[in-house]
Image 1 (cartoon, each protein chain N blue to C red):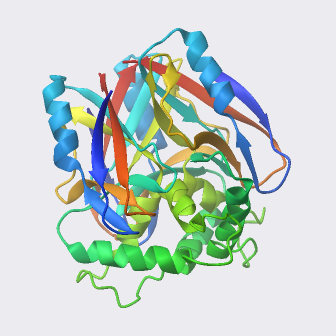
Image 2: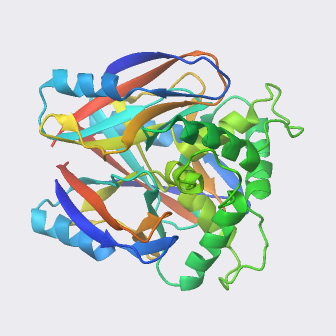
Length: 131
Length: 131
Length: 131
């Protein structure tokens, strides 16, 4: 298992970790298999999304705030229940396919760390399985 | 890795790909393990849902449109930010268990390609890991 | 593949299955790899969330009911379309990393069975892959 460090800058933040994960896959020397990325935090997640247009991120933040209010008389005393719900909905885990030594992604896809309660110092664990 | 082709017919569409994925698993000759299905698109996803009642699909479309408006002054110029958000929430990846040469599914479960920005020609990648 | 039984108590219920899954991993004797947990039901899911404060669960229920109404003239005759949608959004599958003979989780993370249409007798399937 390998671990990468991610520093988020805002309460809601999206950080591209594609090149870091691809490097770990390349350095493993494993040509074919799968890779599981796991986020050990309850107010963040891992996702795949559009790599071209920063407006997608802008819209995503507004969509999530429309879907789940940031403040709504939540009982949880830290007040970050929106972040816990978004973490559950995004999932803290994703498994991707490795072929010819690199992760298979569509033309417009990158791998993003999803921060819902930043800014914080975060981690992502990466485990490769030979297939 | 194997790839299947999927032609979606509507902007919001749900296509049952269970038999195609089960065929790939059977033809692999692998009796026990896991299978990762990955969708290389940012406005689609992969999911498991009820295989019996087409009304579930009808309701799902209305639920998603209630949850995230199709149009809402989105900045992303393609205007399909709802589709990007639903792709992130559904996830473009799922990993299932193989036992006795076939994918383990509950009585009411089938595997569905979730189209949020169709109609389009789409793909799903399938990778089997022996376990 | 191993299977655990879960008895849910309410329509919306969240059951901590961390120790049961960790036991299966420990008893497997596999030190490093991944584990896929799969829920064979269309109105339930599997998730990771905060293990400390029961108010997170209380808020999560209210957030999901705000996001997707429990009743809304759904066509599906069983009337549980909210549960089908939440199952799709949470996902019935998650893959976690095994290191040094146990599942890697953050300090505040536990593994939860998410019930959206209980009370019912439910199952979770567990498959370990050596890595």
